[in-house]
Amino acid sequence: MKENKTISFVIPCYHSEQTLAGVVKEIEETMAGLPVYAYEIIMVNDGSGKETWDVIRSLCEGRKDRTGMDLARNFGQHAALMAGIRAAKGDIVVCLDDDGQTPADEVGKLLAAIEDGADVAYASYEHKEHSAFRNFGSWVNEKMLEKMLNKPHDLYVSSYFAMRRFVADEVLRYQNSYPYLLGLVLRTTKNIVNVPVHHRRREIGNSGYTFGKLLALWMNGFTAFSIKPLRLGTALGAACSVLAFVYAIYTIVKKMVNPAVPVGFSALMTAIVFFGGMILLMLGLAGEYIGRTYISVNSAPQYVIRETTGKEEY
Image (cartoon, rainbow, N blue to C red; front, side, top):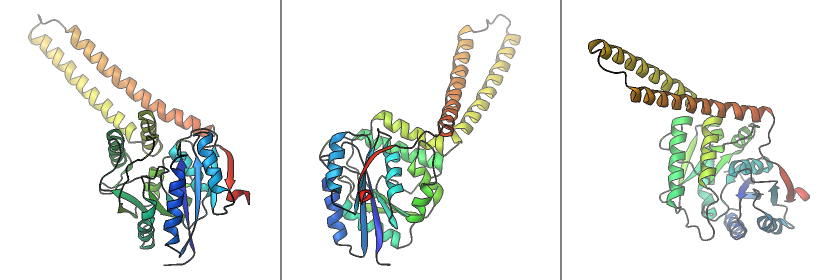
């Protein structure tokens, strides 16, 4: 193991004024037991207001190993991570949550996995202390990553992970809007491992992920890094065309066999509604891709930094 490597801790912050100081303290205490590493802490306030930013400023005051960044509005967790990673100078970048549920005192396990040769090490949990809604969202995210981004079935991804410098640099090459960090990591390397850690119960507050934010995150994932939804649309369109052709043949044969049989109005309306719905669905999906491309071409920012504090001031 090389000495004097620097570890960059990146913490996206959202209404965490009551928990952030505890996370930072735990990092300090843990790194004191790992003297072969230097470290820095980068805290990114993702538009959560004055209270959280005041805590970040106080934690950075007089410290050259801490940086605080205040985003102009809420850009989302992955955009905040991109801002923090761009400011990170370390040989290894560790990303973790601001609520204390991800155990900073077990970061040594992630670092050991990197030192053993992994490019990225994700924390995995035997049991997550989240609400049923969040656990369901995580399950959907896992399945989406498997189907859309070819994530290995046995790989668990989480918001607590460590990555080598070259992975961080490759991630930062993505300049467009709607960053999706998991997709960026998966397209960079397949040398990814899981490290078992325990997941803590949330002591204060609620998760910042609403259903709308989870839906937006999933949309980022499969529109930014996969064309499989469009291919699915092609397959569904072909299937519907075949069904429509078969139904037309059936209707003609039925009429020829028994001319007295009336042409079914209800069947016709069902077919129109079904195929019309499919067309609108795929037009909406295509429009989503086109809209995101348009926004990216117009250089919409991943994030906007209002203010920095700490290390950057020296």
